[in-house]
View 1 (cartoon, chains in turn yellow, cyan):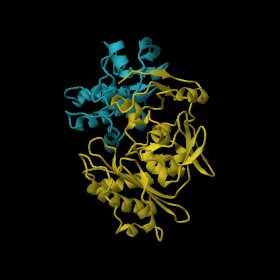
View 2 (cartoon, rainbow over the protein chains, first blue to last red):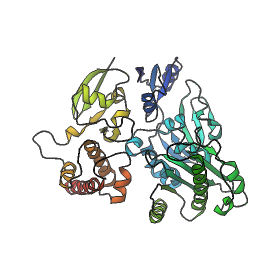
View 3 (tube, rainbow over the protein chains, first blue to last red):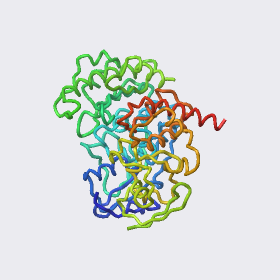
View 4 (cartoon, rainbow over the protein chains, first blue to last red):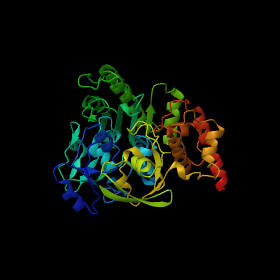
Length: 290
Length: 159
């Protein structure tokens, strides 16, 4: 890894100015960025550590849930307010990475990284979240663009707000080695019946809304509505673990299951992998509902 | 180079590090605390887990400079020379939860984090919580048993 200058400013204003320098990058929990720097994917001249100066409080208000960008995954997953009012999000975050990564990684870092198999971007898209930065508020649908984000130099994510959904579920099928989502599908249905389906892990550009699936659900939020829907294998990720046809198939299967789960008596999060037993799948569902 | 100071295993330590110096490198190469290991160096295997301000973290994926002023606990603090093994370490020995031992310090450090959060976790919880720790020898079975037993012993101590 190429060396860099490390800064730990004490205010967002100071961080913003430092981040405007040539070759500067912002550092939050570092669970994606430091790994990518080891791989040579980034070689910043300076890192601006914003840990401790970005808000991290979590609160519920009429608009929904507001989560400070500095909140770690462990803090979000453990938030009593979220577990009560938006349990699907707390459960999703409780399955990002692993426990040690969740103690360090943050909401803001995950959104800025927009990883191809990220869980948070799928949740933001399907729940219609809004990303708050030091300069503006951006709907999630406009925030994530083709493997990147619309963040400008010096712009810092301060929070994300999520409307409350009763009908919402996330199902992911894990990569057998690294255990991130080979494909994940987040399904939600608003109180007035508008469906959202977001898919992650399937495209190199990151999570996206699956408009065809959503259109097939407008007359009723039931899994049966997706019977004939297929995600085109074109432009899907192909790797050692799954080709495009497999990911296409997974997306359709997981979308039907996610819709059934979201519309059922116990919405929540299910994590599947090779060798998952049906009994385990049901157990997870029950646990999340409890 | 930049100055850094932190509290490692209860002792204030100071050093001069580069921006890119990871915490694990500082612990092993500057302080000589080689109980913390580097396995994959890609945030997956957990051999490098230490506690930072009481929370398990992967020391290969955090900068030494990010730990300025922090309290870091490594495997060396659990049973100082001449003292008996920590109950979790004793459980690993009792249940034969290691073969080559390379992953063990990370396993013990995450085991303590699991015990902190779950008290006396069941088998499914322990297996789920070991997602970020890789062992290539044991098949995990005895590690899971050891963590259950170690957590039980710790709960008994506190009672």
